[in-house]
Picture 1: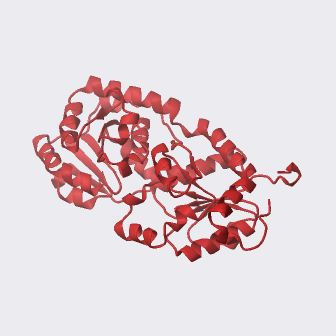
Picture 2: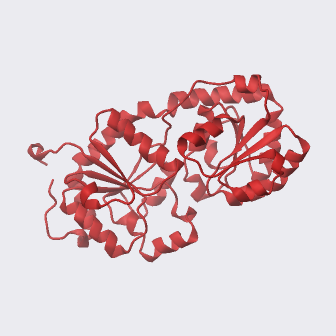
Picture 3: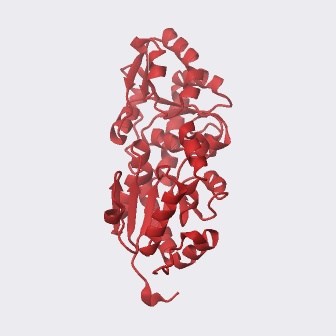
Length: 357
């Protein structure tokens, strides 16, 4: 490829879904790239593609809404004809979506995952699964932007009730398994307060005097509520789709000096030997282990300190931004080769116009 036609990297980020995950996975990383001087624009849904996508751009589209195969094909053709690449940001195993979305994706032959130049995800295991649909899949690990100072005093000098955080999205099945033992704990120990974010059915199953309930929160408020707690409960069934997630909630809890009791599978990669949290083998153990950790201050403090240092060193977003920008630059420099791979897989993507590099 001739360097005479080399074009500078332009990033156009299309954000479809909103919530805490958007802030962590999309907004904070790309705002960080803007601070590094990258030519990067973010667009929230609804957006008009002609205004959102400049010619000769690397387009990163966060989880497109299910459309027809033909519609996805038309969008890809339009992006390609403008000399741009389409990279889809996809951060969950499709089996974890609501049934109607799973059915919609299947009915269009998984078009968003296949009709693109590549995928962008944060889990090695998920990337392995997605490569069955899209061989060009890149992995950029999740990390967190803000790691506030370590706060052990809230544990050592506690004067208020013992606050337990439960703020897991789409985990109603696991929460139901905890409800009975959690209710028993509330009745046995009047000094605990269960802080529930986003799961009204769980909150309604527990004694009112033991509950502080919140709706789904924006990211800043979510972190503030978590910061006010001492233990976070992270139940998660040990299954392939769940293990394709990233341990972002453990990172957030560690950053906010909150001890973690977590379900099997996913969290085993970061919670090694129970040195930075309590890892259970099945969900029936979660509440008994949380009760144990409540009454063992020294072990709780040691776990929090260890987890905090790991997150501070290895999961802070700032040091990872340069390598992220290097990857995007490398992808852009390989755009001709990536487009050829796409056309070989799906010749119908070509509108007859040459790809303008």
